Length: 414
Image 1 (tube, rainbow, N blue to C red):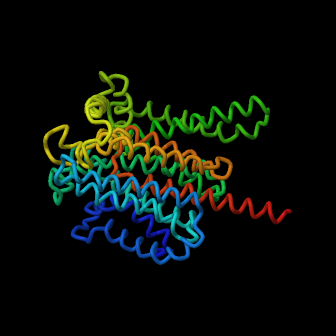
Image 2: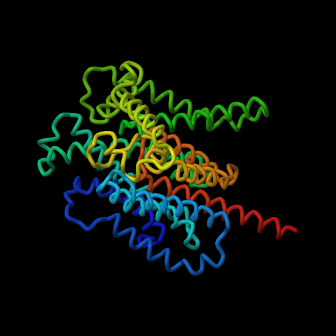
Image 3: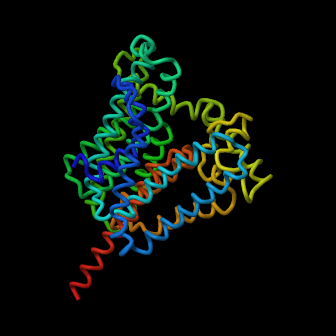
């Protein structure tokens, strides 16, 4: 189990976050975890390639081809990009993003349950380590507690709150919509992930998770009104009661001036961040910076819409400094740096993945598809979508397997 292809793939997808939290365990100087896991994943994929290519589904092959063409356009843009160094870093890093997409499509007998049994504890481990650090940080005692870290490392660590929120949003939606999991395990993991999601303070992941759950609850209520089956309302009622109770509990505790309880400090921080969307002008500095980036991106795209400015060019174009930066919207980023054709390829990739999802076979696939999509419209760059691309490939794989099983059952019945 520990050295299965599913567990190694889970490490690859989460390697960036694991590398970030290792110093919190006092571990430094290890070989690059992303590079090591990518090498092992590549070897596994190559060992499966001969068998896979002999019987690969056309749907999978099309997706591999689309992303490969996109990557080739990225490499081609190295010839005219305004960046000299960031472009190389971005192109190399995107290779691991592409690998995460190829792997589930090109290996044989990928087991989704084994994968989640590996991914879930890794996410929880990273989350607990981060929240322990973050509680100390917002208490104002980080310099004393983390003397082995300099100020830049501490500042970089605090930015991990968004990733931790995003990861736990994945767990909330996966376990909420996957009714085949053992009930005790399912609801236990879901509750822990939801608590961490609230505690970490990432507004986007929290709001998008609640939005998707809210749409589902409204749909269930509509079905109740049209079919009058009370059992369809049981889960929505439990969720509404739990969320309402959580909100009352949070508000009643965070309005108190004393927040000695470490957990309440984290929740208080989240409430303040959420309230900032309403109370701060323009939604606060974070929202304002995204609006500024969007205006700048659209203006520059209009000047050079077809070819773009080349891979890795956004940082240089916005600041005249050759560094990695992005406009906090992945489609704007692709259009800005790579132009029309790669943008169309990228949009086509999203469309083709969506087409392969059967909501009846895999409701959690549909929920997570829109969760990832909403998040990349607000945040993310081409070099930090490894988890998203990995899951998008898994959606296709899971739905293809279930579709094949369904066809097999139908043929046997005949």
